[in-house]
Length: 241
Image 1: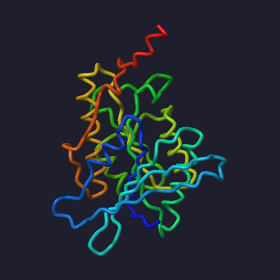
Image 2 (image 1 turned 135 degrees about the vertical axis):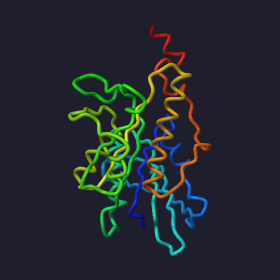
Image 3 (image 1 turned 30 degrees about the vertical axis):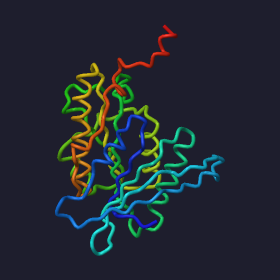
């Protein structure tokens, strides 16, 4: 598969964060870029995983000369153990025909409880501290952009979020230049959580758009804080007391 040198890697989480970011990215009004969409087939049978569906989708933004400027991959929300197999296949697919390793930016929205430092949750002391990034491989345009706007998490931060852990591990093993952008979900009450989550999504989208040379439209964001608020529980959970 032909891909651009700039890659945006999204895992299609159940909360809808990845889909929201993908849907809100588009060419700038004066840009000649056009969209080219494809489905992704990821053969997982060699891992002993039976899967009959598509692996996800990709949107390429192509200029007037037919050159691919950026490719946005939306990986299906696989569960372990198929998750690491699918991610491995997708990274191999991305790099297979590339003359040089593409630069990957991968945004995630993660509950603060999934990020641990000294066995404590990495709670944001302010909303300005709710965005961090990990860097894998050599410095790139993406890392310089992120470093100028946000901080890395504290050293020895532990990650307890499988999709993020898998991507970090595979990128390190394969030696791929990757910038992992981590936004923290709000743990406030539903009304406040909506505003806080939207702010993180907006900041994340703007960073990804700056890297990709695209436009991020806040008007196209679809987000429901009730999906992520700590207080929100399914009615059946009341049966457990």
